[in-house]
Length: 372
Ligand SMILES: Nc1ncnc2c1ncn2[C@@H]1O[C@H](COP(=O)(O)OP(=O)(O)OP(=O)(O)O)[C@@H](O)[C@H]1O
Ligand SMILES: [Mg+2]
Image (cartoon, rainbow, N blue to C red; front, side, top):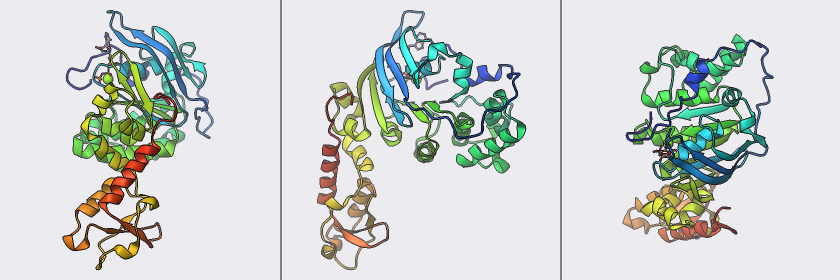
């Protein structure tokens, strides 16, 4: 597992160990709705992990994941991201400190029960090769003793959600899928029980860069829909700022450098390490996050006719920049901007885009502390 050179934790990866568990004898199905959601979130309180060989992977990390948010955990290889994630579902046992999920100390919860109500997605997906897509997705619901009809309904529901309809994909085996499709099955499997907590460790790592963007967008939509509390581990800054509601930047030893909104991390890195990690592409990434707003517009009458194709209010500044950059000289670098209804509400130039970028950066200034 993992990219080349990635450390192994020596811990089995959840689902395999779940599948090896006997099904519970209690066949009573849990109530079908509404899905359980966290109310206070996940709290890591001075969490420390020292592995048996003495490696201290995480030293005194305190961090709160708000209910319903996607928190992206980023940082360089070996900084303790996976260890941190795995302490939440006890695939790794913490050495000291506390992890609370909705106020409940995870060390007081049976680890198997804890994992069954926690979705977990990993880089190499970990699908069982000799089971069909349907059977893979059905693993945990079956272990939870759901009746057959409910399992079948839910499997087809989540396969639809990830764009792999059961009638086309359900009976295939993992080796009959592309890498990206396998990854989506992994996401479907994690979502099968509609878990209140979803932990994702480099979930797009095995997908080629071109398809990754696509898959990220799909998963972002799904996550927004399901309302689970999500911790997403990645070492890709672009992925973190695209998918995270907030981004936590870690450095070696699980040291928290900054946790803030994506724009804040990009525009106002709290430390030199965050600045280094975010790197030279910060402004470009901000363009992709910030959107065209009325404040950046000038009068629509300034547009040179024939009017070039318009940009929409709310489009990303990156998209607006592309539109302006593509204009013929005769357009004098100005595009019309339209609202939801298609009515022209103004015009935009490169200067307006830069203004929007500055405004977005100012608005993202940290209020009090860098850890806000
Ligand atoms: N089972 C283990 N025994 C000893 N040391 C370990 C074990 N698992 C991880 N480590 C060490 O703990 C540190 C943190 O590892 P971890 O896997 O949490 O990093 P990571 O941030 O997820 O890295 P990557 O981005 O490469 O996946 C590393 O120094 C790693 O070598
Ligand atoms: Mg890792």
